[in-house]
Length: 195
Image 1 (spheres, rainbow, N blue to C red):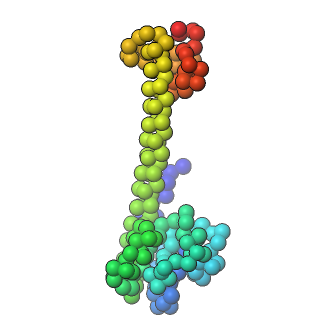
Image 2: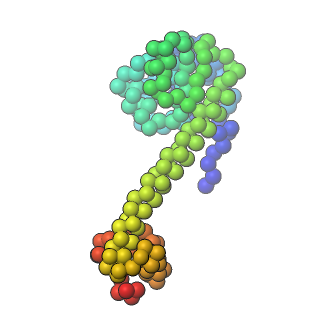
Image 3: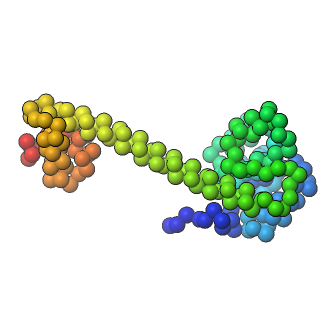
């Protein structure tokens, strides 16, 4: 299944927490044009709902515990900035926004902010997946190293020969080198067929 394009917004869901009625009407109108399902009512009515994007007015900052729970694990956050004071920006940074808009809102810029937010979110998720894979590889390298050292010691061979023995055993048993290394580390020796 292919991932949705960051440029295609139809069918996405948004939670909007905006205090100013004028700004809210602009967002509603633009989201309707873009095909984004919107619910407004703030964070009190958002529990159990999944939002692809959350637009949050900086007037709601600092967040109360209900708001924090709603934001944890939620979609991309777009902050609506009314003031650019350092203290306000610090509160906004705590949201880890993927994009932002400056108040008073205009219809121009909303689409770009949404696309940027979805693209940043997608790239962040890809980086997190890469980090998980690299951490798994690092853990498996430690296991391989431990197995190589055990084989070197038990068979009185150099590192390249020990690794070759492990590789051959893995191929014979149709396992990965990491799986074979974990077995060697657990049992303390190579399987008999290769010894």
